[in-house]
Structures are given as structure tokens and as C-alpha cells.
Amino acid sequence: MEDILRLPIWCYCMFVMGACIGSYLNVVIYRWPREDLSVTEPARSFCPICRSDIPWFRNIPIVTWILQRGKCAECRAPIAFRYVFVEILTAVLFLTGWYIFVTNHTPISPVAAALVAVLSVLLICIAWIDADLMVVPVDFCWWGMGAGLLGACLDPTLVTLDGEPQSIHWWQGGVQALYGMALGWGGLAFVVYLGKKLMGIKRFEFSQAHEWYLREPESEEEQLCFVLKMPRKDVEGEFEEDVYAWGDLFFRDYDRLEIEGHGILKDGERTKATRIVISREMVQMGGEEYSIADMKSLEGKATRVMIPREAMGDGDPPLLGLIGAFIGWHGVVFALFAACIFAILWAIPARIGFGRQLPFGPFLALGGAAWIFGGWSLWEWYFESLAGFGNPAQSGR
Image (cartoon, one colour):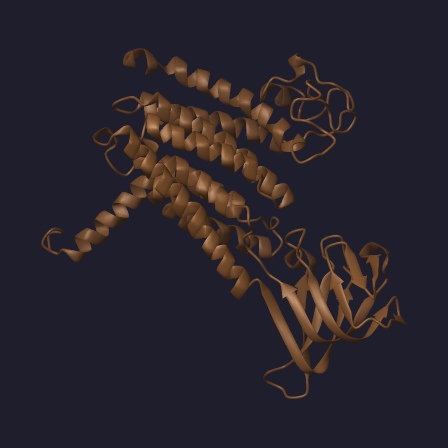
């Protein structure tokens, strides 16, 4: 049986299966957040522009997108590259998981390969939805934790990548998965809680009111900005402008900018409001709500300002708990560390205009995948190096 499962034909089958499932993942990613659509209804895929149904022969994963040059066959509207990218990514992850844990693994572990496929499906869906909407679908995390726990009991390979899975019992694999879930969810939830308490809001209080205003973008590349005039530290009596881009302020839908003060001018007219609350699209003041898009200007003097700043939301802990159920607590530590590295590397070009800012969820997903596809060996090498460094006789010194 092992010789049969090691045949190259199975790798091709896993690639094709991954591409087909990736095609369906595009449906889930597009439809799940929309209240007017169901993941299963309508049953046939359709063009989001012209709404025409897509027949099966024009819905072949990867191939159709290439043959149609990335355009709808009916209305010729461009089909985003992300659709074929999800199909290719899913296919590659399925193929790689099978190759690592079956074709090139002794003894073979088809259960581990299947778990890699399940985890890949969940992480791709969650990461893409989070990147689009800044929200983690927690239901997916619950399903994933159940699958990971069951899989660890059936085959502990993934939760013991840096250990010896053959030497532990089935229930010990489940315990490793529970450790991973507890550390991933509980540990990150504690970090998020502390972050919200200590750094979730940046507060300013002034004895003398400071001027502020909303600065309109001068080009399509620029964003609307909140500008607060602050006293310069090096020159007494002079002020400099602290500028906060709209995308940074309202990273999530529930972020709010709160200002207390006086002299608030809306479209050049003085208001009686002494407190305003600004969200991404609306302004609340004086018991009324106004659309920012309909405003020409907004300014005033502030005695107190609360600016939102938050890197992680409440959905990130269950996501790391899901990852921990599949890869154990060692993998959780690595995934969190790797996610921070990936987030920093992404943020540097995003800050200067190359790419957009992303929530932390996609980086957690990337960190979890990195552990399975080689991160565990880096973990082993690192700790073996530390042990050798701490024992000169063992390291040959």
C-alpha cells in the first residue's frame, strides 16, 4: 500500500483536487460576507459584473482564466488575478502536503497530508476574508479547532513535527492539540486585552485648546487626514502638524476618533457642539449625524482627543487557537513570532505607498503554514544551536 501511495500520480491528483477546491473557496470568500447571497445558492457560479451564469466548461480551475485571458466570456469584464491565485495556491499546498507527508515521508502519513489540506482551506478562507473586511469568521475557527483536535488524535504527526509522533499514544496527540489551542487562543487573547487597555487608544489632554482640522486629499493616491496642531518641543511657542491618515485611524469598522473642545466649524459655519465622534464615513455631533462625503470642511479647537490605534482584533485569538489545534503549542509560538516578522516586512513598503495595510490575521495564517512547510526544522536548528553554544564541550570548543 505504501508503494502505491508514493506513486507520482497521487501528487498530480492532489494538485487537481486542490485547484478544484480552490475554485470553490473563491465562491466562499466572495459570498460568505454578503447577506444577500448563500454559499450554496445560487448553485452555479456567475460573473459579479454582468450576473450571467458561468457554465461548467468555462469554470475549469486555472485553465479557463488563462484561455479567456482573465476576462468574462460574456461581458469581457476583467476577472481579478486573485481568483486564479487562490486556485493555484490551494493546489500547491495540497500537492506539497502530500509530497512531504506521504511521498517523501517514512512512515507515510496520509492523515497528516489530509490535515494539511483541511488547514490550508481554512487559513485561505479566513485570511482572505480578514484582508477584505477586517473581520475573522470565527465560525470557521470553531470548525477548524474540532477538526484539528480529531486529527491529532488520529495521527499526531502535525502536533509533534519537532518530536517523535511514533512514541506517543493517540490521546497524547489530543493533549498536544489542546495545549496548542489553549496557548494560541488564551495567550493571544491576553495580549489583545492588555493592548486594548494600555495602547488601544492614544489620548491627548490640553490645558489650552489646540487646533485641528480634516485635510482633504489633493490627489487620488492621497487619503483624507486628521491633522492636530501640537507644540514643537525644540521651539517654544511654535506648532507642528501631526497628520493621521484615514486608513490608519479607522483600520476597523468600529474604530472611533473622539474630540472634545469648542469652536467647531462645519462647512465654515460655527456649531454649538463641544464633543464629536468621527467614524470612517460619519460624524456625530450635537445629537446629529452627518456624512463625511457630504462635508466640505470640518475643524475646531480640542482640549481632549482620543485617537484609535489597534493592531489586533478579537478574531485573532481564535484564529491562533485554530492553528494551535493543528500544529501544537511549539507551532503556536513559532507562528506568532513569524507572523510578527511577516507583518513588519509587509508594513515597511505599505507605509511608503507600495501595497495596502493588512490586519494581523493573514500573517498569523502565513506563520502557521510556515511551521508546517519547514519552520519546525528551523525551530529545531535554533534550539540545538543554543544548546551547543551553552555547552562548549558538546559544540567542539
